[in-house]
Image (cartoon, rainbow, N blue to C red; front, side, top):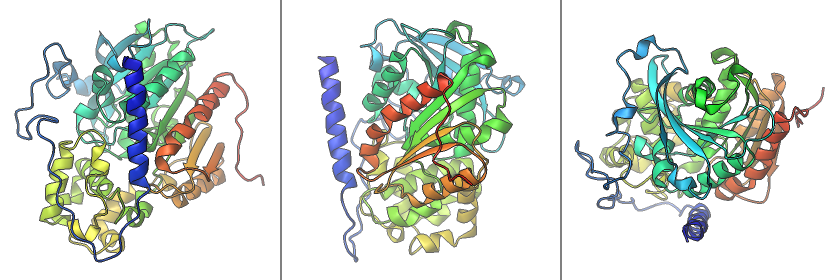
Length: 437
């Protein structure tokens, strides 16, 4: 019954989200959407005293001492395991025989300072022949609290996207690979901050390689990464940063889809769409990493109220993407539109730090998938990213799909992405769609 219920939930989620994505913005003038009121009891009261978990349920990360950084964090090296424990992944209980561990490990934030975050390491019940392989899998967290981080949602089967993501993790385990799932947004949930997320992904690999019960062959382990949409951010940024930040990792390939290559290019397309609140959701995460943005001063009262709710995930995990449908930048900020917003120097400066197109060259072969008609993340900046990576000598297989949109693309990329990693693990030559000189 549990498996049948999960399938029904996945189908319902895809139907609802696809319908939301299919909408089009109404013509001006638009009524100002009201600031949504969070459902009572969804995540507990919004004040400083969080709701208590049910008896026997895992403590939320903000209450669980396991998540707290040790006093000597500064002495640890990136990827060092600070604390570990064995847990159960409730969302994967249909897979018998898997062992699941949580690792608190040291990583590095966007400004270069030390942070402690958690990775969930899952071991298959039937490892593939030969040395163990490792995949760092990155769910689309798309949220702003650790109560929506994978280490918690995997243990509680909570979060709106977790049934879909758990299916992907089950597929990787079914191939006999070790899987590490990092809380890549870090302890303060810096959503969309690529440099932090990429480092957290790389350090999770280091932690998994150094953790004895995982059975990996240390730095000789062949490593792959994958993630879609929000999960593509740590995937692609890790590939861009690996050469300088973690050159010892044997990253043999990555698979990513729905890539936000340059958030500046997506502002105008999201403004007035069903996913308008994604702008504020990302802005809160960026402001936490780069406080010079001074987000409060950019918003009006309505915008500050919405940002406050988003900042505590008051609408549910990932639900903050759609809580102000067809809203406008002019209705929630002190600016007229995307162009006016980007003319503000401190906004442009913060977003420039997130521009993957101008980032380092990918170190490992890459499979990139994007829907031509993606209504959330337009394809133009992804085309530019691929062109730039090809010019720099990267190996990229780029699939521009004409048949779907953002949500359906999450399923369409998954099988080919897994096979791409399987081929890299097998040592087969990586295909490339880059132009040949």
